[in-house]
Image (cartoon, rainbow, N blue to C red; front, top):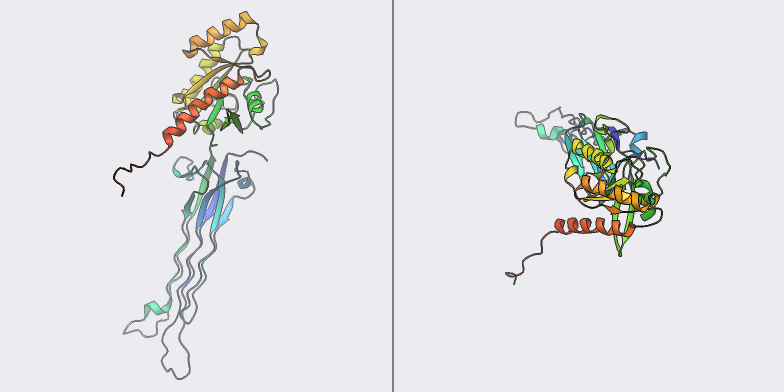
Length: 344
């Protein structure tokens, strides 16, 4: 399945049904009077977060969604039925924006959340409503109100516990493939990863979700390389795993480059807890390893963890370090326990 994290969609709720102009015609009733029913309400347009989706690819092939018009009213005071609703099913983590792609309408972060984007038009009144003492046989009825129509943007931000950031070829995809069942493309050239990937990691009988995004380079916030458009997928994470390749000539410079892009992007990414790791250490001898660790320590302000996803050296330590931050954040998000002191 292809990955698509942004889609432009046209929606229209249903028009209301028209009211009816009708009169009673029954034997032995000389002046039956009006009995036109009201029109039915038009269908609504809803958006709902469902389980089992992690892409907006369905909205590449269909961009127009229209709810049904309400049924027209009929004689004998029979009101028209409501038009059928339209439900746009999206992955959890989807945001809905207005046509300007800046004004947020809804943010669906949990499976089962629903939001009404466009409300159907009201049905028109039948001629029964227009009967007065001076007009016993009104021959007018209201048409239904038109539905709402608009163009919206759907933007997906993956929901994960930990996000991996780093320069291209820092070993992000190799690490994801090593600790989860995900199968990202792995090669020895930059920008092998073109789309974000998700995987579930397990350590000490506990699980958390990891998101991998394409590598950042200097100037990514200005669109250099793939740019920073995929950084939105780590906005919701609880901790960042910052991988710095041991093959970098200057690990300190590589670290500062990525940190600079995170700060330029904003949205609180540079304030998230961070686990700094010197990756691909299996390619270094003891002396080179010592020098690279010292360089990265000066830049990060603390000693980095060492890891090789190929030989599995240090992998468990990295997962445990991430799990500490994930569990701290989960505990902070839990609602406080109820106070039972005054309960009967």
